[in-house]
Image (cartoon, rainbow, N blue to C red):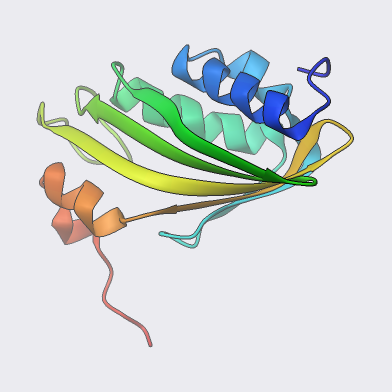
Length: 145
């Protein structure tokens, strides 16, 4: 993905790679020191290997997983992608047995781009809605607040 130096082009190519489950190509857009955080879960992954591992696990559990950009907004080196995703729970995921249920969710990603690479990525979505659709609400942890 090094050919996509402009932030908008990079993010469009990155999401295209995700939609095609081309995780090797997606990894090419992620800097070695990239800090990737799910704001819904608090989980953090650093670097393309760890990030792509999580994406591969998700796609294995939801083999028909699709993702698309609904809107992209760019300001300098910051890109905000409003996305839509869906899939069917057909294979085990993080210790949970598949149940054939589908999910559809929308979310937003904020990415910082430096030298044609994603160096910071924050993903925002409604985790409770996702788990409810999948019949997995028991996975929500109580508020520790």
